[in-house]
Image (cartoon, rainbow, N blue to C red):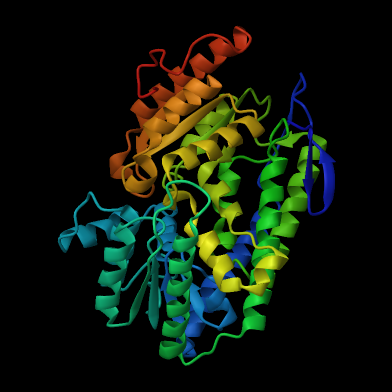
Length: 446
């Protein structure tokens, strides 16, 4: 691979790992801006409710661009579930849902948000999310969201639109599938116009798509800087910094924020500043974050391991549009939202994972076997075999849940992590040849 990366601000050299101490990095300077930006977003959500402006509860895989173009405020119950997890109050709200008969085997995002909805309270100044005027559910991430959104629509007695996106076992998306999704998007826009009394302006939609493209380009630039050694950031930074590209993609504020973040990581990469002093192991993470336990990431850091890439954060670099797309923005959205990470076949996912591992010079891959997200987790053993057979890299499985700590065993997990890192160290000492991923690590390495 090339030793340079080119972003929207030009080319910057990626440093190779050098002997000697690495300057330890504190928190990103951009974190203060992130907190302010997302605080402003949620304040805007509550103000929209007070001012009787339309609010749409949407899934993370739903097209947000038409909503911003129409002046409709998007709200993400999945993001809210992550907030419940990171603020360590998910169990409280999950148990409310469980007490109403919802199984603990259901997605904890769903249980947490349903529990908060039923109790009408939450961690945002003690309030639950403001009620929706409409709900939009895209099936391109999982099937759980369909029933989840139906529950919320019944609770508030509000109209629901389900955007059906056929499964894409292999790329590219077939023409007949694109035509079908295009028709779905046209119906969705008509649905929004009917229930919000707002019209979609083509010129405003194109402007929002342009901002989405700028945002994605900057996000990809941010990710490329992580190819440097030492990596200027880790998963701790990226899992939190993905919030704007999910919630406010398509806005001027989002573009401005990621320009600042990219500039900061560029500077860090140029000066050899990273979150892990004496970086020794470069890892890729598969699946959603364990929001309730970022201490586990720090446990890796303390042992010289840094996560230089995540399939989850990397997936948000897929929503890019070209000037040619602006001639037919509906078809462009049909293509982009059909090919999202959890709507494609395992072979496609494997190809993306292998490319990431190569580009970021990974020493191993860690799979979060996520009790909540079956769609994300079910193909992981296939992916692990592909990583082992095609790249010869060790893999580690960690069993947990993204927001529910009741499905996580800290001591057992750390034992597996220690064994995995011993394998990596053995490979380092043998010049990269030695223990394979299947060598007994006393845990779910495979």
